[in-house]
Image 1 (spheres, rainbow over the protein chains, first blue to last red):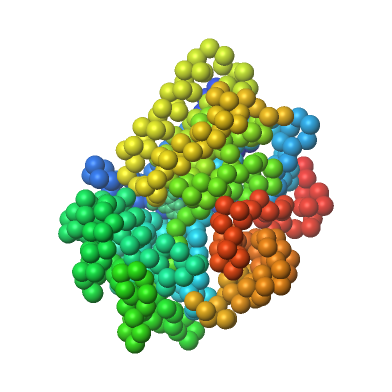
Image 2 (image 1 turned 135 degrees about the horizontal axis):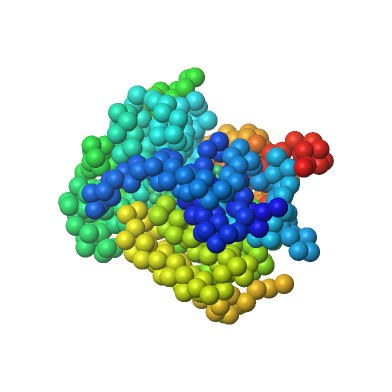
Length: 409
Length: 91
Ligand SMILES: Cc1cc2nc3c(=O)[nH]c(=O)nc-3n(C[C@H](O)[C@H](O)[C@H](O)COP(=O)(O)OP(=O)(O)OC[C@H]3O[C@@H](n4cnc5c(N)ncnc54)[C@H](O)[C@@H]3O)c2cc1C
């Protein structure tokens, strides 16, 4: 039997497993995908520093470490339930059930869909699916595509598609509605571009980031936003156009697009069909928390972190004894942060197991500080308010469970 | 986006209109909508549509997003065979 079961072999789960194993704990890692690495496997882009972030290399490095430490990594194993008996956590999977004293849930995030009429046509996919097909499976998703939804993930994956030689004709917004919410509001989108400055440099050069921070100036900027859009690495970003429908008989043939006003209202009679043979819908990310929900973990709604989040401490401990979380399940952030959080969770498990009484407190504190440090220098920030979100969760934890993580039951 | 036929739950082919109708009939939780329409009961177990159903519920009822309980997940959260559930595959 393992001491620790890690659910999810993304950067958070792998880093957590490694930290545990380095202190002699016996660890099993489960992932439903056929290879470890999680979302790292799709990531490839240039950081503002000029360095390239190659997620596949990072995943391979982590995987090599798990081998060196004799961590049992099992792929193709899907966890469908998690429950506790008197002493142990029971992890139920499609390959049978297992028990352990400690469980780290690092299931990452999933994409928000935005339903658009015609979105079930072959050739329509989420932007993340396009990333996986391009960078993991090396399959060409199409010849000429349109992205619906302008956010940081869309820009990052846009450059990846371009690197692979796939043409992306334009980026437009989804139609404004209570379902698409901020994604359909030009001003909200423009605001969020601030955190994507390095991926959309021409835009910011044109407007200046100070300009973007000020609400009134943002409105003015949108009034003068060029009709043809502004280019992000060669592809026009059209903040004043919205996709009304994906058209095609048996597969995608194009997108019907209308002009929109700065506040997102459609301009009647401005419809135009742009040809495309694939469409990516980019609705943003939300934490994949279902396993912690079935385990009975309490949740807190923190919009800056991506929605309902399992309550956790800075040590990545939940109020349920022996249950830890790390990575995107605790809030939407980049791969480096997920990795740093995984290390915190791993060290916290080591501390709780009593394996390393001496130095662990200091190491744990250092790892907590390191997460903040990485966050400050993160090349990709999904939500500009993430710091406040983290603070909200921290304060909630301290007020409910005390500083050093007193544990319920 | 008032297209009546617009599919929200792709696995079970449940339209936007069917979800709104379930809410008009009194459903006030994601689980309630699921029981009336099957939205979220397919292969992906709501990974795709659950957030959309929550937004439609908020729109129709004026509920706040924080008041819409996500903790209605029930095991199994992933599709499994009866054999596995029955313990045949247990080691
Ligand atoms: C489509 C997409 C694209 C992204 N692109 C970028 C990017 O370009 N740059 C960036 O910095 N960040 C990106 N991110 C954010 C990304 O989530 C983080 O970078 C990082 O990968 C999060 O690490 P994690 O370990 O928390 O989760 P993940 O890397 O998502 O890993 C979670 C793992 O858990 C597994 N899993 C989930 N549920 C189960 C279950 N029930 N049973 C078994 N296994 C399960 C999954 O298969 C997955 O391998 C992207 C996220 C998504 C969803």
